Length: 95
Image 1 (cartoon, rainbow, N blue to C red):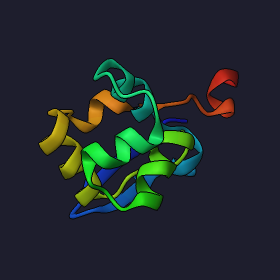
Image 2 (spheres, rainbow, N blue to C red):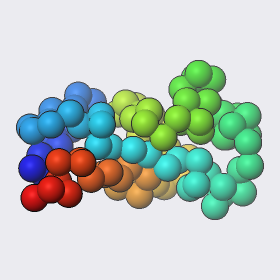
Image 3 (tube, helix red, strand yellow):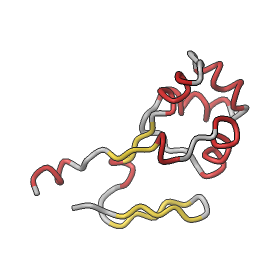
Image 4 (cartoon, rainbow, N blue to C red):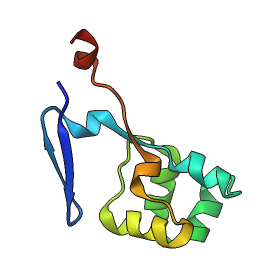
């Protein structure tokens, strides 16, 4: 069963299933396209909170909050749809 993800003022509202089991991010891949090769370089370039920058770099299941998405857009011009993607729910394979 597929659900619907709605982001309203930085809050995630998901209808059906657990959204955080389905959504992933690949910020590290996008940063490497910008020539950044380490979490440290990413942190310095974005000027995000250090822990946030390192989580984005190392944890694909860490979903950024609205202000972080805004910062990624300001620095790199990335839309959230570029680095956020859905992983099919295992239940979807049975349908």
